[in-house]
Image (cartoon, rainbow, N blue to C red; front, top):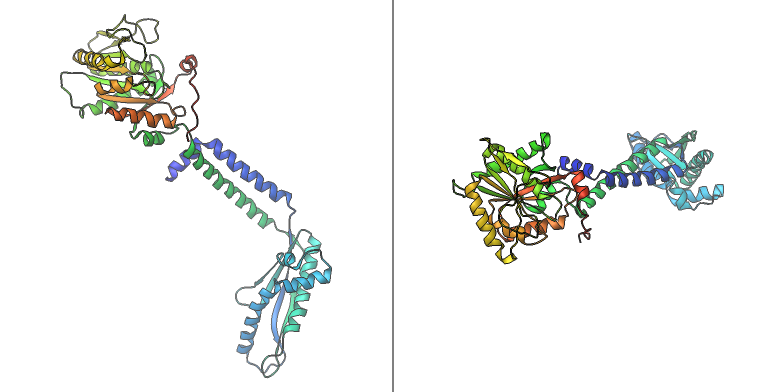
Length: 432
Protein backbone atom coordinates (compact mmCIF):
# COMPACT_ATOMS: atom_id res chain seq x y z
CA UNK A 1 0.00 0.00 0.00
CA UNK A 2 1.53 3.33 -1.09
CA UNK A 3 1.05 6.63 0.72
CA UNK A 4 -1.72 7.85 -1.60
CA UNK A 5 -3.70 4.63 -1.12
CA UNK A 6 -3.13 4.82 2.62
CA UNK A 7 -4.59 8.32 2.89
CA UNK A 8 -7.45 7.42 0.53
CA UNK A 9 -8.31 4.45 2.76
CA UNK A 10 -8.24 6.61 5.88
CA UNK A 11 -10.51 9.14 4.16
CA UNK A 12 -12.92 6.37 3.21
CA UNK A 13 -13.05 4.99 6.76
CA UNK A 14 -12.57 8.33 8.49
CA UNK A 15 -15.22 7.57 11.11
CA UNK A 16 -13.43 4.38 12.14
CA UNK A 17 -10.09 6.19 12.17
CA UNK A 18 -11.51 9.08 14.18
CA UNK A 19 -13.23 6.84 16.72
CA UNK A 20 -10.17 4.64 17.34
CA UNK A 21 -7.78 7.60 17.46
CA UNK A 22 -10.05 9.60 19.78
CA UNK A 23 -10.51 6.64 22.13
CA UNK A 24 -6.75 6.17 22.54
CA UNK A 25 -6.02 9.90 22.91
CA UNK A 26 -8.82 10.45 25.43
CA UNK A 27 -7.74 7.44 27.50
CA UNK A 28 -4.07 8.49 27.42
CA UNK A 29 -4.71 12.15 28.23
CA UNK A 30 -7.07 11.19 31.03
CA UNK A 31 -4.38 9.00 32.57
CA UNK A 32 -1.80 11.80 32.30
CA UNK A 33 -4.10 14.46 33.74
CA UNK A 34 -5.35 12.29 36.59
CA UNK A 35 -1.81 11.54 37.72
CA UNK A 36 -0.20 14.34 39.78
CA UNK A 37 2.49 16.38 38.11
CA UNK A 38 5.87 15.03 39.31
CA UNK A 39 8.55 17.37 40.65
CA UNK A 40 12.28 16.90 40.23
CA UNK A 41 15.16 18.20 42.34
CA UNK A 42 18.80 17.78 41.36
CA UNK A 43 22.12 17.85 43.16
CA UNK A 44 25.70 17.45 41.92
CA UNK A 45 28.55 15.43 43.34
CA UNK A 46 32.24 15.69 42.44
CA UNK A 47 34.56 12.73 42.81
CA UNK A 48 38.19 13.53 43.64
CA UNK A 49 41.28 12.10 45.30
CA UNK A 50 42.41 13.65 48.55
CA UNK A 51 45.73 13.13 50.30
CA UNK A 52 49.31 13.51 49.20
CA UNK A 53 50.14 15.26 45.95
CA UNK A 54 53.11 13.11 45.05
CA UNK A 55 51.08 10.80 42.72
CA UNK A 56 50.99 11.74 39.09
CA UNK A 57 47.97 13.51 37.65
CA UNK A 58 47.54 10.73 35.10
CA UNK A 59 47.18 8.09 37.78
CA UNK A 60 44.66 10.24 39.68
CA UNK A 61 42.52 10.68 36.57
CA UNK A 62 42.46 6.93 35.92
CA UNK A 63 41.38 6.16 39.47
CA UNK A 64 38.68 8.86 39.46
CA UNK A 65 37.28 7.71 36.08
CA UNK A 66 36.88 4.20 37.41
CA UNK A 67 35.17 5.39 40.56
CA UNK A 68 32.74 7.69 38.73
CA UNK A 69 31.37 4.84 36.64
CA UNK A 70 30.95 2.69 39.73
CA UNK A 71 29.30 5.50 41.71
CA UNK A 72 26.63 6.07 39.06
CA UNK A 73 25.46 2.48 39.44
CA UNK A 74 25.79 2.65 43.22
CA UNK A 75 23.61 5.78 43.51
CA UNK A 76 20.60 3.97 42.01
CA UNK A 77 21.11 0.75 43.94
CA UNK A 78 18.85 -0.59 46.67
CA UNK A 79 21.72 -0.24 49.18
CA UNK A 80 21.77 3.57 49.16
CA UNK A 81 17.98 3.74 48.84
CA UNK A 82 17.61 1.58 51.94
CA UNK A 83 19.81 3.99 53.93
CA UNK A 84 17.52 6.88 52.83
CA UNK A 85 14.40 4.91 53.75
CA UNK A 86 15.81 4.20 57.17
CA UNK A 87 17.01 7.77 57.70
CA UNK A 88 13.67 9.40 56.79
CA UNK A 89 11.46 6.52 57.94
CA UNK A 90 9.72 6.34 54.56
CA UNK A 91 6.78 4.02 53.73
CA UNK A 92 8.31 2.98 50.37
CA UNK A 93 10.59 0.03 49.89
CA UNK A 94 14.18 0.54 48.84
CA UNK A 95 13.41 -0.75 45.34
CA UNK A 96 10.47 1.64 44.89
CA UNK A 97 12.58 4.60 46.01
CA UNK A 98 15.46 3.61 43.76
CA UNK A 99 13.12 3.93 40.75
CA UNK A 100 12.71 7.65 41.57
CA UNK A 101 16.45 8.32 41.32
CA UNK A 102 18.64 8.79 38.25
CA UNK A 103 22.36 9.49 38.08
CA UNK A 104 24.39 10.59 35.05
CA UNK A 105 27.94 11.73 34.44
CA UNK A 106 28.18 15.33 33.29
CA UNK A 107 29.70 15.14 29.79
CA UNK A 108 32.30 15.03 28.51
CA UNK A 109 34.10 12.56 30.79
CA UNK A 110 34.12 14.69 33.93
CA UNK A 111 34.27 13.71 37.57
CA UNK A 112 30.88 15.34 38.26
CA UNK A 113 27.71 13.29 38.73
CA UNK A 114 24.21 14.71 38.35
CA UNK A 115 21.68 13.13 40.73
CA UNK A 116 17.97 13.75 40.06
CA UNK A 117 15.16 12.68 42.38
CA UNK A 118 11.51 12.71 41.26
CA UNK A 119 8.51 12.84 43.58
CA UNK A 120 4.86 13.97 43.59
CA UNK A 121 5.68 16.48 46.38
CA UNK A 122 8.02 19.39 45.68
CA UNK A 123 9.33 19.60 49.26
CA UNK A 124 9.79 15.85 49.47
CA UNK A 125 11.74 15.76 46.18
CA UNK A 126 14.22 18.33 47.52
CA UNK A 127 14.54 16.51 50.86
CA UNK A 128 15.18 13.20 49.12
CA UNK A 129 17.86 14.75 46.87
CA UNK A 130 19.76 16.15 49.87
CA UNK A 131 19.44 12.91 51.83
CA UNK A 132 20.57 10.77 48.89
CA UNK A 133 23.69 12.89 48.46
CA UNK A 134 24.56 12.75 52.17
CA UNK A 135 23.88 9.04 52.61
CA UNK A 136 25.77 8.15 49.46
CA UNK A 137 28.88 10.10 50.53
CA UNK A 138 28.88 8.42 53.94
CA UNK A 139 28.43 5.00 52.40
CA UNK A 140 31.08 5.54 49.71
CA UNK A 141 33.62 6.89 52.20
CA UNK A 142 33.10 3.82 54.36
CA UNK A 143 33.82 1.60 51.38
CA UNK A 144 36.87 3.45 50.15
CA UNK A 145 40.35 2.49 51.32
CA UNK A 146 43.61 4.35 50.71
CA UNK A 147 45.09 3.64 47.28
CA UNK A 148 48.67 3.68 46.12
CA UNK A 149 51.87 3.82 48.10
CA UNK A 150 51.11 7.31 49.38
CA UNK A 151 47.70 6.55 50.83
CA UNK A 152 45.50 8.56 48.46
CA UNK A 153 41.76 8.19 49.05
CA UNK A 154 38.79 8.76 46.68
CA UNK A 155 36.21 11.10 48.15
CA UNK A 156 32.84 12.56 46.96
CA UNK A 157 31.77 16.12 47.66
CA UNK A 158 28.46 17.95 47.16
CA UNK A 159 29.20 20.87 44.87
CA UNK A 160 25.56 21.86 44.19
CA UNK A 161 22.94 21.48 46.87
CA UNK A 162 19.50 20.18 45.99
CA UNK A 163 17.81 22.67 43.65
CA UNK A 164 14.34 24.11 44.02
CA UNK A 165 11.92 21.45 42.68
CA UNK A 166 10.46 22.04 39.22
CA UNK A 167 7.54 20.47 37.46
CA UNK A 168 8.36 17.97 34.72
CA UNK A 169 6.39 19.81 32.05
CA UNK A 170 8.72 18.76 29.27
CA UNK A 171 8.20 15.13 30.21
CA UNK A 172 4.44 15.61 30.23
CA UNK A 173 4.54 17.25 26.81
CA UNK A 174 6.52 14.27 25.59
CA UNK A 175 3.88 11.95 27.00
CA UNK A 176 1.17 13.96 25.24
CA UNK A 177 3.05 13.56 21.95
CA UNK A 178 3.45 9.83 22.51
CA UNK A 179 -0.27 9.46 23.26
CA UNK A 180 -1.24 11.34 20.08
CA UNK A 181 1.18 9.27 18.01
CA UNK A 182 -0.20 6.08 19.56
CA UNK A 183 -3.72 7.24 18.70
CA UNK A 184 -2.75 7.75 15.05
CA UNK A 185 -1.10 4.32 14.88
CA UNK A 186 -4.06 2.56 16.52
CA UNK A 187 -6.43 4.46 14.22
CA UNK A 188 -4.46 3.33 11.16
CA UNK A 189 -4.53 -0.27 12.39
CA UNK A 190 -8.29 -0.02 12.94
CA UNK A 191 -8.74 1.28 9.38
CA UNK A 192 -6.64 -1.59 7.99
CA UNK A 193 -8.72 -4.16 9.89
CA UNK A 194 -11.95 -2.43 8.81
CA UNK A 195 -10.88 -2.41 5.17
CA UNK A 196 -9.94 -6.10 5.26
CA UNK A 197 -13.17 -7.20 6.93
CA UNK A 198 -15.66 -4.80 5.31
CA UNK A 199 -18.51 -6.84 3.83
CA UNK A 200 -19.26 -4.35 1.04
CA UNK A 201 -17.20 -2.98 -1.84
CA UNK A 202 -16.30 0.67 -1.27
CA UNK A 203 -13.45 1.53 -3.65
CA UNK A 204 -12.69 1.10 -7.35
CA UNK A 205 -9.42 -0.66 -6.58
CA UNK A 206 -11.19 -3.14 -4.30
CA UNK A 207 -13.87 -3.77 -6.94
CA UNK A 208 -11.21 -4.41 -9.59
CA UNK A 209 -9.35 -6.76 -7.25
CA UNK A 210 -12.45 -8.81 -6.41
CA UNK A 211 -13.92 -8.89 -9.93
CA UNK A 212 -10.62 -9.42 -11.74
CA UNK A 213 -11.58 -6.76 -14.32
CA UNK A 214 -11.15 -2.98 -14.25
CA UNK A 215 -13.86 -0.47 -13.44
CA UNK A 216 -14.46 1.19 -16.81
CA UNK A 217 -16.99 3.84 -15.88
CA UNK A 218 -19.19 5.53 -13.34
CA UNK A 219 -22.73 6.54 -14.30
CA UNK A 220 -25.80 7.87 -12.48
CA UNK A 221 -29.01 5.87 -12.25
CA UNK A 222 -31.32 8.63 -13.53
CA UNK A 223 -34.03 8.33 -16.13
CA UNK A 224 -33.47 10.31 -19.35
CA UNK A 225 -30.07 11.54 -18.17
CA UNK A 226 -28.92 14.92 -19.48
CA UNK A 227 -26.21 17.46 -18.90
CA UNK A 228 -23.34 16.22 -16.77
CA UNK A 229 -25.18 12.97 -16.05
CA UNK A 230 -25.42 12.15 -19.74
CA UNK A 231 -21.76 13.11 -20.27
CA UNK A 232 -20.76 10.20 -18.04
CA UNK A 233 -22.65 7.84 -20.36
CA UNK A 234 -20.78 9.40 -23.29
CA UNK A 235 -17.49 8.54 -21.59
CA UNK A 236 -18.69 4.96 -21.09
CA UNK A 237 -19.59 4.84 -24.79
CA UNK A 238 -16.09 6.02 -25.69
CA UNK A 239 -14.60 3.17 -23.68
CA UNK A 240 -16.85 0.64 -25.40
CA UNK A 241 -15.93 2.01 -28.83
CA UNK A 242 -12.26 1.47 -28.00
CA UNK A 243 -12.96 -2.26 -27.68
CA UNK A 244 -14.73 -2.65 -31.02
CA UNK A 245 -11.51 -3.20 -32.98
CA UNK A 246 -10.67 -6.13 -30.73
CA UNK A 247 -13.98 -7.93 -31.31
CA UNK A 248 -14.15 -10.72 -33.89
CA UNK A 249 -17.30 -9.88 -35.77
CA UNK A 250 -18.64 -9.33 -39.26
CA UNK A 251 -18.53 -5.72 -40.47
CA UNK A 252 -22.18 -6.05 -41.52
CA UNK A 253 -23.47 -7.08 -38.09
CA UNK A 254 -24.22 -4.94 -35.09
CA UNK A 255 -22.79 -5.29 -31.61
CA UNK A 256 -24.68 -6.69 -28.63
CA UNK A 257 -23.89 -5.21 -25.22
CA UNK A 258 -25.34 -6.69 -22.07
CA UNK A 259 -25.73 -4.84 -18.76
CA UNK A 260 -26.41 -6.89 -15.63
CA UNK A 261 -26.32 -6.02 -11.96
CA UNK A 262 -24.84 -8.30 -9.31
CA UNK A 263 -27.88 -8.78 -7.08
CA UNK A 264 -30.40 -6.18 -8.20
CA UNK A 265 -28.67 -3.09 -6.80
CA UNK A 266 -29.38 -1.14 -10.01
CA UNK A 267 -32.19 -0.73 -12.54
CA UNK A 268 -30.36 -2.05 -15.60
CA UNK A 269 -33.13 -0.88 -17.95
CA UNK A 270 -32.45 2.74 -16.95
CA UNK A 271 -28.74 2.19 -17.56
CA UNK A 272 -29.34 0.47 -20.89
CA UNK A 273 -31.67 3.23 -22.08
CA UNK A 274 -29.17 5.99 -21.31
CA UNK A 275 -26.27 4.06 -22.83
CA UNK A 276 -28.43 3.37 -25.89
CA UNK A 277 -29.03 7.10 -26.35
CA UNK A 278 -25.30 7.79 -26.07
CA UNK A 279 -24.50 5.11 -28.69
CA UNK A 280 -27.32 6.35 -30.93
CA UNK A 281 -25.93 9.85 -31.10
CA UNK A 282 -22.64 8.55 -32.48
CA UNK A 283 -23.19 5.27 -34.29
CA UNK A 284 -26.70 5.28 -35.78
CA UNK A 285 -29.53 2.85 -35.13
CA UNK A 286 -29.70 1.41 -31.61
CA UNK A 287 -32.31 -0.66 -29.81
CA UNK A 288 -32.66 -1.56 -26.16
CA UNK A 289 -34.05 -4.91 -25.02
CA UNK A 290 -35.68 -5.24 -21.62
CA UNK A 291 -34.89 -8.74 -20.38
CA UNK A 292 -34.60 -7.76 -16.74
CA UNK A 293 -37.91 -9.34 -15.70
CA UNK A 294 -38.09 -13.00 -14.77
CA UNK A 295 -41.56 -13.46 -16.33
CA UNK A 296 -41.59 -12.92 -20.06
CA UNK A 297 -44.44 -12.91 -22.56
CA UNK A 298 -43.14 -12.55 -26.07
CA UNK A 299 -39.94 -12.32 -28.01
CA UNK A 300 -41.32 -9.60 -30.27
CA UNK A 301 -41.19 -5.93 -29.23
CA UNK A 302 -44.39 -4.67 -27.63
CA UNK A 303 -45.87 -1.21 -28.06
CA UNK A 304 -43.24 1.45 -27.79
CA UNK A 305 -43.11 3.17 -24.41
CA UNK A 306 -40.64 4.98 -22.24
CA UNK A 307 -38.54 3.27 -19.63
CA UNK A 308 -40.71 4.81 -16.93
CA UNK A 309 -43.84 3.30 -18.45
CA UNK A 310 -45.48 6.71 -18.90
CA UNK A 311 -45.07 7.55 -22.55
CA UNK A 312 -42.95 6.95 -25.64
CA UNK A 313 -39.25 7.50 -25.36
CA UNK A 314 -37.40 7.67 -28.68
CA UNK A 315 -33.75 7.92 -29.54
CA UNK A 316 -32.69 10.45 -32.21
CA UNK A 317 -30.11 9.08 -34.62
CA UNK A 318 -27.75 10.83 -36.97
CA UNK A 319 -30.04 10.76 -40.01
CA UNK A 320 -33.01 12.30 -38.25
CA UNK A 321 -35.04 9.12 -37.84
CA UNK A 322 -36.49 8.10 -34.49
CA UNK A 323 -35.78 4.68 -33.01
CA UNK A 324 -37.95 3.68 -30.05
CA UNK A 325 -36.70 2.15 -26.83
CA UNK A 326 -38.71 -1.05 -26.92
CA UNK A 327 -38.97 -3.02 -23.69
CA UNK A 328 -39.40 -6.66 -24.63
CA UNK A 329 -41.28 -9.31 -22.62
CA UNK A 330 -40.65 -13.01 -22.74
CA UNK A 331 -42.62 -16.21 -22.21
CA UNK A 332 -40.51 -19.27 -22.79
CA UNK A 333 -39.32 -22.14 -20.69
CA UNK A 334 -35.80 -21.89 -19.30
CA UNK A 335 -34.62 -24.58 -21.69
CA UNK A 336 -35.80 -22.55 -24.72
CA UNK A 337 -34.00 -19.36 -23.64
CA UNK A 338 -30.68 -19.91 -25.46
CA UNK A 339 -32.35 -20.66 -28.79
CA UNK A 340 -34.92 -17.88 -28.52
CA UNK A 341 -32.47 -15.23 -27.39
CA UNK A 342 -29.89 -16.29 -29.95
CA UNK A 343 -32.42 -15.99 -32.79
CA UNK A 344 -33.51 -12.56 -31.55
CA UNK A 345 -29.98 -11.15 -31.26
CA UNK A 346 -29.00 -12.52 -34.67
CA UNK A 347 -31.98 -10.76 -36.26
CA UNK A 348 -31.37 -7.48 -34.42
CA UNK A 349 -27.67 -7.45 -35.32
CA UNK A 350 -28.72 -7.08 -38.99
CA UNK A 351 -31.08 -4.19 -38.25
CA UNK A 352 -29.17 -2.15 -35.67
CA UNK A 353 -25.64 -0.93 -35.10
CA UNK A 354 -25.89 -1.61 -31.39
CA UNK A 355 -28.22 -3.79 -29.33
CA UNK A 356 -28.18 -3.00 -25.60
CA UNK A 357 -29.66 -5.72 -23.38
CA UNK A 358 -30.88 -4.94 -19.86
CA UNK A 359 -30.35 -8.34 -18.21
CA UNK A 360 -31.67 -9.62 -14.87
CA UNK A 361 -29.34 -9.76 -11.83
CA UNK A 362 -26.63 -12.39 -12.22
CA UNK A 363 -27.31 -13.94 -8.81
CA UNK A 364 -31.10 -13.98 -9.25
CA UNK A 365 -31.07 -16.75 -11.84
CA UNK A 366 -28.99 -18.26 -14.62
CA UNK A 367 -30.68 -16.04 -17.24
CA UNK A 368 -27.95 -13.41 -17.35
CA UNK A 369 -25.26 -16.09 -17.66
CA UNK A 370 -27.12 -17.74 -20.56
CA UNK A 371 -27.68 -14.42 -22.37
CA UNK A 372 -24.03 -13.44 -21.98
CA UNK A 373 -23.09 -16.20 -24.44
CA UNK A 374 -24.67 -14.13 -27.25
CA UNK A 375 -23.16 -10.76 -26.23
CA UNK A 376 -20.04 -9.10 -27.59
CA UNK A 377 -19.40 -7.47 -24.26
CA UNK A 378 -20.84 -7.67 -20.74
CA UNK A 379 -20.90 -4.81 -18.24
CA UNK A 380 -21.44 -5.68 -14.58
CA UNK A 381 -23.18 -2.87 -12.70
CA UNK A 382 -22.21 -2.42 -9.07
CA UNK A 383 -22.83 0.23 -6.41
CA UNK A 384 -19.89 1.16 -4.20
CA UNK A 385 -20.95 0.99 -0.59
CA UNK A 386 -23.88 -1.29 -1.44
CA UNK A 387 -22.62 -4.29 -3.43
CA UNK A 388 -21.50 -7.10 -1.12
CA UNK A 389 -17.97 -8.41 -1.68
CA UNK A 390 -19.04 -12.02 -1.60
CA UNK A 391 -21.81 -11.36 -4.13
CA UNK A 392 -19.44 -9.61 -6.54
CA UNK A 393 -17.00 -12.53 -6.45
CA UNK A 394 -19.78 -15.07 -7.00
CA UNK A 395 -21.34 -13.08 -9.86
CA UNK A 396 -18.06 -12.77 -11.76
CA UNK A 397 -17.36 -16.47 -11.25
CA UNK A 398 -20.76 -17.38 -12.69
CA UNK A 399 -20.16 -15.22 -15.75
CA UNK A 400 -16.69 -16.60 -16.32
CA UNK A 401 -17.93 -20.17 -15.98
CA UNK A 402 -20.11 -19.59 -19.07
CA UNK A 403 -17.34 -17.85 -20.99
CA UNK A 404 -18.97 -14.42 -20.81
CA UNK A 405 -16.92 -11.59 -22.40
CA UNK A 406 -16.83 -9.54 -19.19
CA UNK A 407 -15.34 -6.16 -20.13
CA UNK A 408 -15.42 -4.61 -16.68
CA UNK A 409 -17.55 -3.22 -13.91
CA UNK A 410 -19.52 0.02 -13.94
CA UNK A 411 -20.16 1.96 -10.75
CA UNK A 412 -23.74 3.17 -10.56
CA UNK A 413 -24.70 6.15 -8.41
CA UNK A 414 -28.27 5.32 -7.35
CA UNK A 415 -30.96 7.91 -7.96
CA UNK A 416 -32.51 8.85 -4.60
CA UNK A 417 -36.10 8.82 -5.82
CA UNK A 418 -35.67 5.58 -7.75
CA UNK A 419 -34.04 3.88 -4.78
CA UNK A 420 -36.85 5.01 -2.50
CA UNK A 421 -39.46 3.36 -4.74
CA UNK A 422 -37.48 0.13 -5.04
CA UNK A 423 -38.44 -2.70 -2.64
CA UNK A 424 -36.03 -3.20 0.23
CA UNK A 425 -33.43 -5.88 -0.34
CA UNK A 426 -32.92 -8.56 2.31
CA UNK A 427 -29.92 -8.03 4.55
CA UNK A 428 -27.07 -10.41 3.80
CA UNK A 429 -25.22 -12.18 6.55
CA UNK A 430 -21.70 -10.91 7.27
CA UNK A 431 -18.87 -12.33 5.26
CA UNK A 432 -17.07 -15.06 7.08
